[in-house]
Length: 265
Image 1 (cartoon, one colour):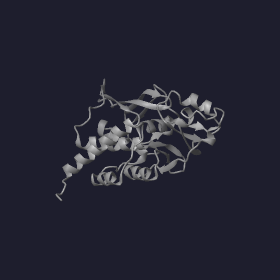
Image 2: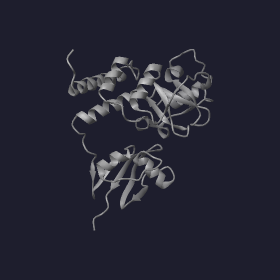
Image 3: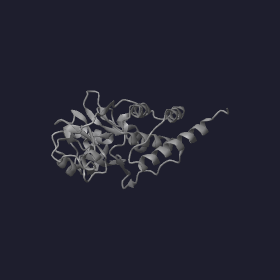
Image 4: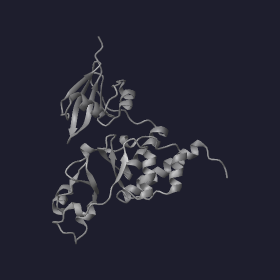
């Protein structure tokens, strides 16, 4: 059997991930991943990032209380594009399980007065520090499509889906082997606008601003830590002469931050 060089492996991995992404969108988030496919990913050296970098943070998750009736839950989920929702017992750190949207809307026999507690399914739990590929392999092996991500204190950090993990791997391949992405749009006065979820290492590489480490992973997390509260549009914090201006807030999440360089004397 002829040996496969790094270039061949990279092409195989990129093609595999692209097919996965297509299958995910075609099947509404459901895809089967074989052991052979996972071995190919390992050979390609992908999946070294952590789940915390991929997850949807808890501030952006729609949690449903176990005491809600089916009718009440349907009202809450009707306008979302998601299909699985974590169910809590009054506190976001106390996740009982999850419900699928079809449990609420596609089963005609479901009593609209039934409490979600009666429909809750078991949910997978993953530590935020787990590697992406290891998480994907574990979720695939156990048949889970959604997992609750736990922080180091046992609280809920967010959620992650198979689709999130696969799309992260697709992005990893594109970032490493494709043409570099277009830069963030430049703003006046040597400013740049970045996504609030941009991690600190990428921020430093993109703008030259090295923020101190702390109990946060992202630009938005740094801003929140400095403010000591949930940021609002127009809020601003400073570090070493740099200004970080909250330009867009979506719900409770900092969506965009303007990073302004110190003025030269």
